[in-house]
Length: 311
Image 1: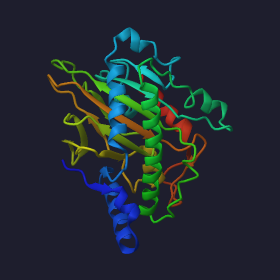
Image 2: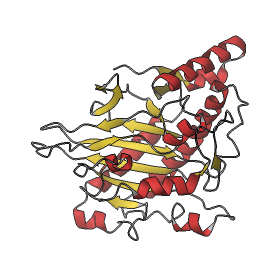
Image 3: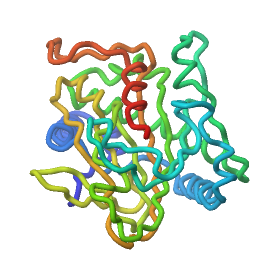
Image 4: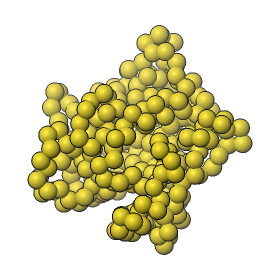
């Protein structure tokens, strides 16, 4: 399946009718499928390469070394989550075997002065960086780049919804976004029924910025009652709408089910996923003023979703 491509740089440089047309195309994509390939992003390839090198170094360690940066307590969001510790399909109430993956997770680089105690206890927990040469420098630089890119995408989203470009700026001024590096080990016979590398789920926040490893398939999107393979081109990100953005638009835009499928004897695969989330106390209510959804607070909504996936 070839996803539609949106050139962010070209949109930002466009004026007049050209800009209106590009915004309308973005609205169409988000309405039809909620997935797109993002080009014109401006993230240097050298920075991407440094991040991949850091992530490769972390996952190449033995289990004991990785376990030193396990989450600080039960239910903590950041650190190393080992194999068979998570089942993403559980966020939709489905009972499946745990996913065939491991991950390292990190949170915001700064804590606002007015952060609440609840926010500090969850999303502002410190990231337990591993003792891997260059890891923290590469991780923090990439996270900062993703935060900036997400803000640019949200400005484009505002234009697509025929709102002022800065409509979402206050809501995302102190985002509680998370960055996740994922490692899907090579598969064997995949004997357990319904076991996937990442179970069928929709993402929780406003948008996800995914950088899949080049020439490694596995990502599938649910379309027309079937699972369809998705492959991104080189030097491009895959963007998808999350549940919170679907609520915000009263389901004008769709948060589409996706998974990373497990098949027998697949090679190892890695990906980087940045999950963008508005500030902890930001209230999310339908932009059209409807009662399609009750208002929710960004942070507690995210925490509830996250805690439903543990095994």
